[in-house]
Length: 496
Ligand code: LFR
Image (tube, rainbow, N blue to C red; front, side):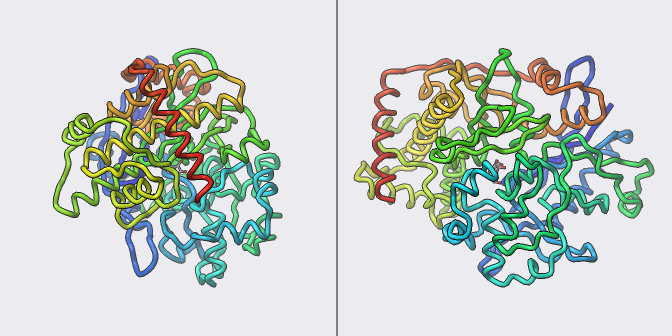
């Protein structure tokens, strides 16, 4: 049996064929395409129609290669972004990208209408100004005509799915990331929606991962010259939900994971949201997971800081290969300066390397000068932040995690994995890389009743993909570094 997964990531999207045979999953990437946001005037947009073209292209390629018997396809992507449709089902505008800065200062306004505690207790979601709620409120404040004319709101994978099938559905894992969904009521929180003066009619019924959404429309099949029917399924459409579903459980116990890409999502799986004073204080979130789970996790700004720095250097004329970056980091002296990777100044600065230098200057630290020093500062700060968050998760859950499972594209960076093991003082198990696509595929198999549950899915991952173990090194030095890092975080929270 064959299924097709589309995973739209921060710089590229991919179409991946998945086949399970005798408890062993093989994946094959058949199409890869750019996913580049487009700045128009003061706004940053999704290039949504181009992505839809690429999705059709992926379906076509699958057939051309000979996969003519695909049982289903599904799409996942990052959270919080959405498109708005009018009452005739037409897309009203190109969706905004979550790094669009129109939400700057909007959270404070929203919190004057709904107190922070109340919003957290109703949704369980961390406060980040990228959340859908702040985008919608910013649009309302700006008298955005798309919002004024909207009849429905669909998260990006739901939107692309609608283009394919004509069916408008809201998938649960992604819906929870809006900060407008109430996990206790298992529905959109219409009280919040109404208090903010947002149109309640735009929110569609939610469906669970593993639910069949519809068939690819005959017009699209004609366009592609495809005879056989093709079903579209909802999976964990939030890419992180899919990635967490693909964490191979090595031991049957509570586990901690780090989904590692542009963002670093560090968390653990829980049966119910953990909504209390500590989660609120530490800004830890409860996002919906697959199979009735919740993802108790924290967003850490992740490899974005590194990707943006290398992008800037490339614009300035120097392209650093992956190997060269590694060499430069290894040559730079360790532990010279740290940043809090989650400072809002790093969300979308014009020039990331200068922003990192500015942070170090403002916190009276050594200011990294060379590219190697800047990269080393980023990596060390990231992994020290991992430790900081992991300790809080342990305090919250009362569980002591003996290891950390890292999944996602970020684990190709072996220094990141090794530094993580060093910083957290425990072994890291890294793999698989293509976790989101794999989670997407495995959920389709569950929806098609070929896999029974998440446990079986995770056993398949463990059997099918190499997992690399990193042992901790240099414990003493990292311990000292961590103590210094905590002082910087402390001082910074007083100043900013
Ligand atoms: C990772 C991710 C995170 C989400 C961020 C923005 O790709 O989906 O989970 O917080 O992107 O949507």
